[in-house]
Length: 218
Image (cartoon, rainbow, N blue to C red):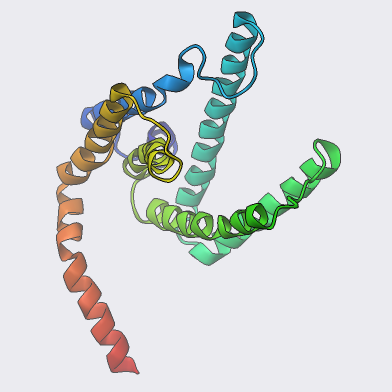
């Protein structure tokens, strides 16, 4: 995202941001390190060669997902004057259409028969929509290279949720990776930007002022 923003939107790409991005990515690698160790792949592998091939495919899929996400959010940044609701609606409709086409031509659609699984599947859309709203607002409001640093927290929170909700164990290396990611991918970039600090400190006052204005208009 930082590279796209720098090339096409003339956004800043400072050495400090590059350092934070590299350090945050290194933390993510540590969090995901268990998945690259032998015997930790969730897919069946009948030989070392098959396991290596599976990991290569997994990495390529994840890499492609990252590239496509960067292109999508870069487009959102370019459309910063378009209302967020319009962008969310277009993304949702496009996703539904692509899912239907994939169900027709690639893999048949399968609706879970277990009511609990079906309910969880439906409820999972709520945080996904909220996340999409927040990311759309963030990329429209700030530089893409700065906002994208916060996306490093995705794997960290996924690992922590697995630890809390499903009892999945985390190694010392993964805990270290989580700390590095939060430190270099979020906290240090956040507080190294003077204008961002001012906005954070003014949030409570701005929130109170907005509430008072809303009550006054009513």
